[in-house]
Length: 239
Image (cartoon, rainbow, N blue to C red; front, side, top):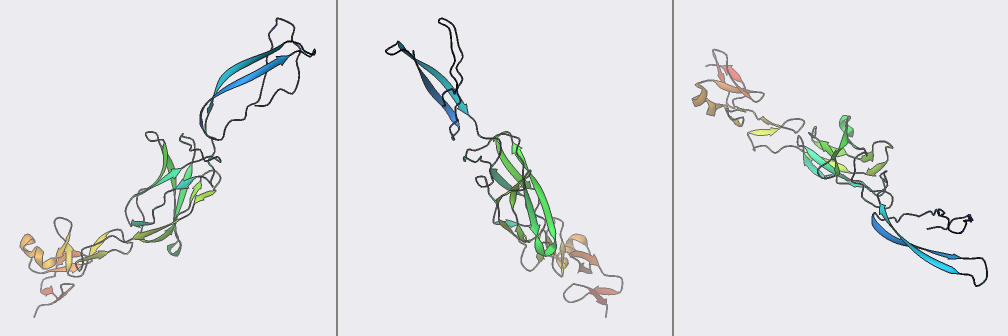
């Protein structure tokens, strides 16, 4: 606290107001203070009085996030097509956590070789008082750059890369599509009733088809006068 810069004359028995400036602590919390005031007359050896004035101070975090003190949890590895959630820890310049709405963060998920670039904005979760950036679906496989920044100032608070691997598919009968977000059936296989890849010949009993072959992951019947070739990827004229 700083003492007042100017003196004030108060008549005996009257009330005066004393104003002081207080610098808040850097750490948030509740503080109890006692201000001791000593009054003494200007006359040598005059009467002296000391007054202790208690007061409380509630220190709140600053309202602006500091990019050098705030952090984000960027996952290093994900699966293409999955949803990911990035938690943002907002702090002020004194490293006090900011857990109130009103801030905005964003992440730019970018894949340089494909020209793909998407920006996702943060949400404030009232139940947990936390900020999250939700990516509902990783668009494809590849290694993305994923800087997280303050939306208003574009100041980066966390840089990172996200390596999106393709989905895992059943060996030999299915493989990831070009984007790596879903499985497609390999040659000679098609989607079965349950959505899984099966050999087209295994569907014969279920579909009463005698000449199924695979076309782009779908089992189709050959035209009249033709039959599936040896690997069931096309049709050939019947002998």
